[in-house]
Image (cartoon, rainbow, N blue to C red; front, side, top):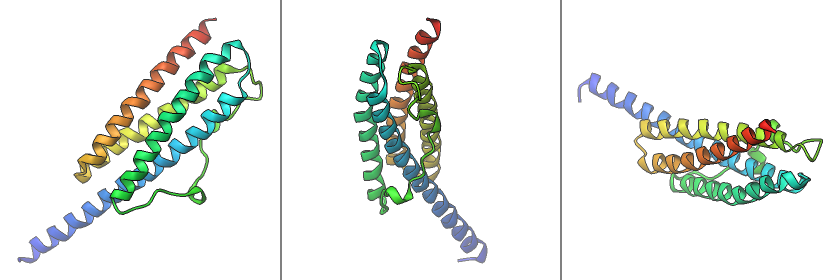
Length: 168
């Protein structure tokens, strides 16, 4: 093989490794984001008070199961790629705006926190779609597109709640 071809092949192999590492990094990040979201949704569903909070609490509880399903699918994909999902020692909380409000009747603060979390999730999954496409990983790409659709639906639903609460 001519030296130029060997060098090209080595560079392509390095690029593929880098692309695959980006996919794994994003899968691990998304996995942790989903679990943090579950924790915060659960806590907010417990601490919110008031008649007006009931619909939001119900939606958070329903979304918890979906977010857990996302985490499970991401963890399974990591395993299929020869990796492992991260454990709690690798976890750094980042969802500051989704922390339970001091005033347990401040439903809008929770809605805004959900919108932040869903916006971050949408960004993560869009990045994962692109990384998987670049890495030539259609399975991860399909998974990311499926979860992205769910996250966009959640965000849309909570945008409606925010609009309603702000108009009152």
